[in-house]
Image (cartoon, rainbow over all chains, first blue to last red; front, side, top):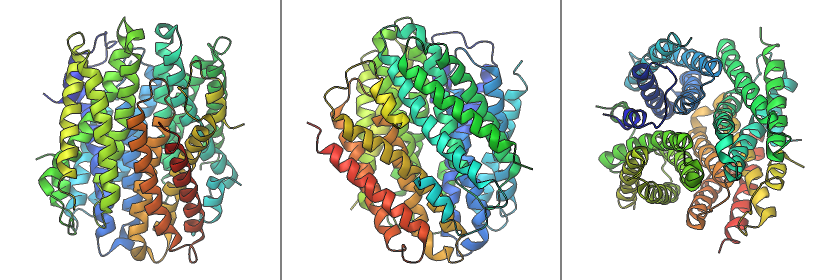
Length: 135
Length: 135
Length: 135
Length: 135
């Protein structure tokens, strides 16, 4: 079991009716995606053709920041403001979509973009799956 | 002139038609609000009645994270994905609204909540003003 | 293989002689510990005895911030400034030590503190193991 | 008065003997420097000669992350762990030194690097000034 799942399992209060499995998956996906995007931005910077990867680097950095904030917000539970959770998840899904599309367009040429695109796709899906359960 | 304004003034490329004055104001408001919320969470923790401030602390921490990510996304310019910018600004406005409301409800009792609520109000307004200019 | 390990495996440039296994372990430990500490702070806030957990919450929040920054710095590779890497790792080890000690002192009473303390211990050790390999 | 100064002025507990003026200056410098470095990384990405600015971009991103974490740690007060505060300030001073040196080396050519270098110098100095007051 991951530490994120253990932290949810040992939470001392009610989680307020949120889908625990999807919440766990979404926290883990956000944390993984934030790191992958940070690393992908740096890998792009190391490519000889860095000038052609400017947009990818920016989208990576944006996605890292939004995923990180989303993972943090989702790690706080009692008194969920469903409206805030929803808008944050929508921003995260939008960031992951933009970054996943951009990275996917380079994934034939850059393996790190392929790995990162997969993290973005998983995270986008996890955000949408969790949004779908919010009242 | 603030460093944020100077960084925008010395930007070596076109900002893509975004309203420069509102962008500057929004970046500055996000950065200020993130710090105020981090400090307000800690001030609430120092209050004797901390048990009554749990929701305020959580909202402060959420707002700090979302404002910080928003300030970073807004600090990147070329190739703006207007859709991403809009969803991030909407999440930030929602976080600032929730935190501003919560802090305002304690502002008669806790001066730090009053100062923080003012930062949240300014930041929420700056986000809405900037969203209104996006195509 | 984790996404962090895959990102290192697909890095398009030389990693500059850093111990790849310890680097991977340290990035993963930082990312995990940052999330665990964020969640533990929130779990502490949900405890009835929150007033007795103020120090734990603060140490959790500090540790989360320092681990997150460290995980990001370690995710950037070429042109390592060994001096910067070392000071950042030392700050992270200090934050993990402080938070691990604090959480461990509550781990008999709060399961989330036990889980978090274990993440802190692993991350502290991973930081020290990596520092030991820096020239 | 800045919001950071107001938050310190309205803090409901003793600050534990830390030099309030230097603490305020250091928090403000960290927050400003984090934003300037985020913006400078993006400005460098927009330069035609981006391939020659890889190191500057990385140093900017590292410095932004470390300054942001430092600003957050310094915004929490009671129960200061002087050892943690010191190591974090030392990491921040190292990051600012590295980034200030790198940006200064381009400041004749890129105005944004000149502005950023000044923020880094101020923040490095503010960190050293604060460290000097810790017991």
